[in-house]
Length: 314
Image 1 (cartoon, rainbow, N blue to C red):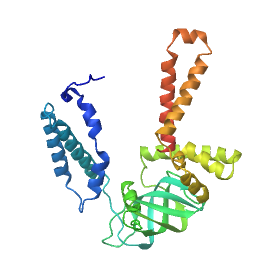
Image 2 (cartoon, rainbow, N blue to C red):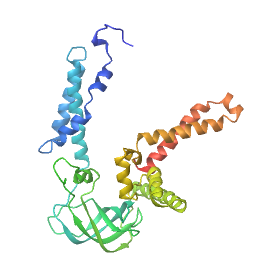
Image 3 (cartoon, rainbow, N blue to C red):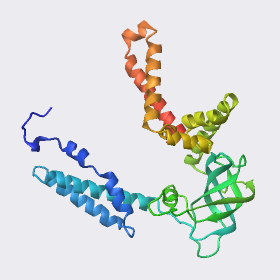
Image 4 (cartoon, rainbow, N blue to C red):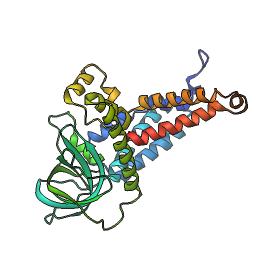
């Protein structure tokens, strides 16, 4: 602990950095910009300010220099993230357009199903921006399997704008998910032969989706109603099956965060696995006095938490 009266210059620079790290402010400034910033200018400014903060590390202006450098670094990070995910966005509605692609994700909702299609081929008029991904809704129980290559006709709509100034921006959320349009499937969905392999990520997504489906089927066989939906949400991250009244009641009571997989859930899983494995190993005195069972338990907890992270898609 720092002694009372010691000079401020002896404080750890990392402490000042953590104290002034304004990541939220950086994002707010970025999204408040009237036009898209130039990535090269944002990165160059951040580098210059970081160097200036390093040079001024022994002066009184060091905290201010760190704060400015952190702001610039956060702004540059947001700019680079936007440049990395840049893709086409539908500007106007399209009716009865034929689309072919790989199914990347699938969600089972209360009344309908929804899936994200990675577009490989799309019949569109000249001048329409090519879309990389679209999110489509279908009748409940008719969504295709993750990893399959399908052909369908759809009605596509541009991403929704905020309903009122300052409200949630659905279009921005879809943009950073790589989705350029949403819509509805018209007619039957045909599974056809893929022109090429979907890649490693698609095989991984199909494997994880299969595990989620198996867990959901097991829960459905022993639990019903909203209890099943909540159990599925806590294990696999699927929240769409929770009915609107229960969802509203959870948020009104201040318990809505329990349904969203977060660090709290990771800590619970890791803690349960750690103490369970350690208790089991402690039943064998030979292991207890010979091997570091505490470290073994910690490794098991980390593996379990990592698996839960992948399973829930958090």
